[in-house]
Length: 160
Image (cartoon, rainbow, N blue to C red):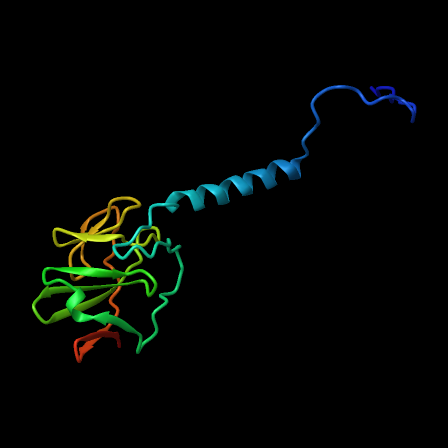
């Protein structure tokens, strides 16, 4: 059965009602919403102990290159550590004179760790906690923080 075609004169006024949304617009809107959700996952949560701000994203390469001076070793407390946000590195000192360099990027979803409290490195996004050697103490992270070699010479911490 064939339905008759409806013809509308060229000078006829448009019908009132909601505009139709095409399939492409729906998919484009869904893509924008997905990107917004991913960006919102970590937004605002990436504060650092040195107030430099910034939130690393998954897949970001560490900023600090070998030979980059991080600062005085005296800024890294024994039994604690310091987050160097610009270089995306954490330097800890589990025992006097023993320095460990770690990536500041949480392996769970790529957020930047924010602080070191009570001997644990904290990720503010989902609550992962890491030991001063980078080992996972509490998930959801399943992998340790990546090692980043550092040296201490003349009282200064440098990326190796």
